[in-house]
Image (cartoon, rainbow, N blue to C red; front, side):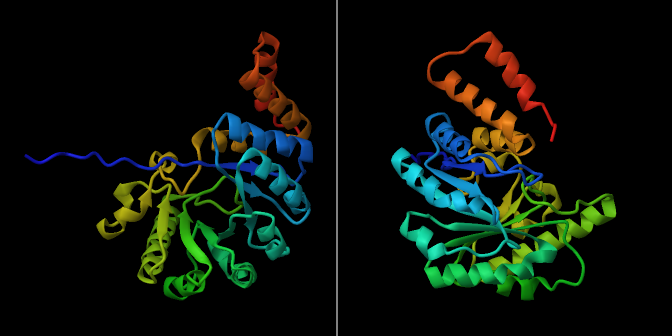
Length: 276
């Protein structure tokens, strides 16, 4: 008699913290440390992507030290057009890997980051985001993206932390989906793991369906993010630094020792404020 063994996914243990908001205004170091602590004690995150830019990456040494005290590992998440820091020095401080994001049309700017990761012996994850199209040859692009330090690739329909144009009609959407599929197929042919993220199965040909990570699966895939941490990051990324500091204090207090009616009302107001 055969025994059925249900397939169980390994849930994600990665959180995300942004060092600035969507307008580029930086968050304070003390707030970033509180945010890391919240990820550890509330979301049980063992790894956290730190989204940084040229200005806020100066906090990485202090955050790496604090993460070590919390029993966490940090990764640097950065846009491909940012200048490359001294990754080797951060690796010695405990940096786990680098996650580089790029719009498909800007993916040629990835090369300096890939070279720096290769020189430092640092694993690198890569994400490219649509809308795709134009004259890019998916085979040529795949060969550029699947060099030695790259361990995994996400080809994304959209990402709230990446600024890119969006398809505005059905024709552009069809072009984007087709280009994403062609790129994923070419990357897979090079032997690199690739995920087609936020696409429904019905728009992808059968041979590519094992690579699909739709919106529901995104929260179940061990390579992606913890849902609670991700949802909080999206909200804080769209908020002002003064409000973010208060939100983090309220959430930490609520998660450690007490909840009050005033804090609950204030938290709702702050999370929905969009003032600059």
